[in-house]
Length: 164
Image 1 (tube, rainbow, N blue to C red):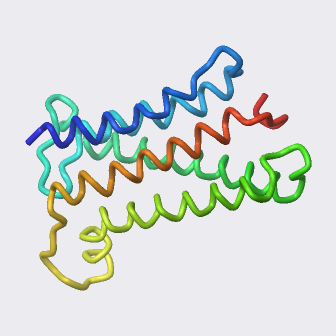
Image 2: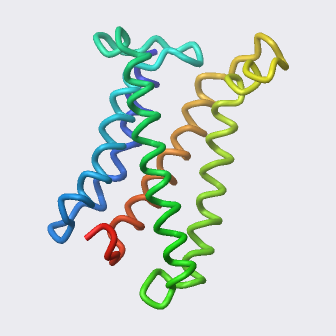
């Protein structure tokens, strides 16, 4: 079932649609790092009864930690940018656009929680032995990737003095 790993890794590539000639090296790095690390991790992933793809599955733990580190940095950049737009929306994305991004982001976060609920159940010690169906994981985690990279791409490509 390595096709599930491959498909989920592939959903990260939606972020590539935001690459253009006007991006600075900083913007390009902020966009490419999470795409690359998430792709590599999902090729190796063995959670949710997946097998991972050789040779990546030999380094699942390391790739997970790198992916988490980059995801935290990306999330913080998004939060900083949104905070700047709330305070200085005259040059930013505007209140209506900001609310649309927040609503869209909530859809992504709900999809992430649905796809990872077996891991969360284990952490809080309920529903022992519960495992998310592979296809359910594929569907909801793919939605999470698509939403996350659309938001990151839109925010990174937006005129921003912090990232230029």
